[in-house]
Image (tube, rainbow, N blue to C red; front, side, top):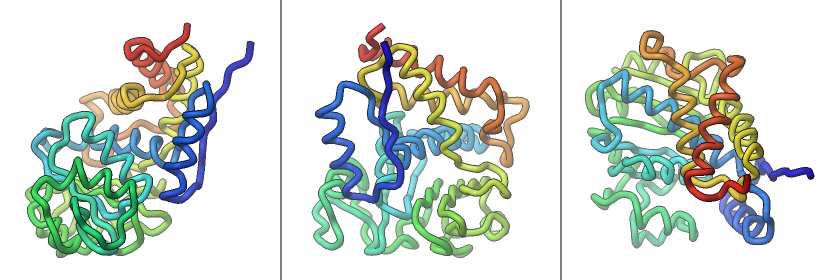
Length: 267
């Protein structure tokens, strides 16, 4: 018989969390909010390779987000799942921390419980001092060259706001960024969800998985990162081309295997 899933798109936070949660409770098929989880998978894939290029470890780096909406929260959660320990999310009110009472909602309160262990308070600029990684899922022009200069040696900048990123690559590189990724196809290292969701759904359907869990998303990210071999990997080539004919099959195989391992496959 037939089997399908639901791919949600363009639903704002915090409503997207409740819609996804309710659908997962009521449906016996996989639910996937691409703006959250597709973004998380591709950011993780890019960051795995960026850390390899810069010789840094996920468990050691300090990661600061600009933006605390659906995508940022999903990215933060998948990074925690692979061993990131020092994460601070910032919104228009500054760093999010447990107990903050301004500009909070239920999802921000939950992510605050598992991030910002050092209880950083203050602005995005304050949080970035000494940080290794900037992940922007916010708005144009929010990261300045001075902020990049305040970061740790060889900082990684993922400025993913579209169509105008938080900082343009040339400005970030001039300020000392070792690696820059954006959401745009006219710059190197495009963070594009199309790298993820076709293979994720193919692999999910192949084993009729009940859900798309964190293990499957991590497996997808690792498969995407693995499509760039060490000989090709560089500061301007972190992610495979979306037209690579082998990409979808590689992601699908990894996702299917993870579904079986984690007990959600039905065949």
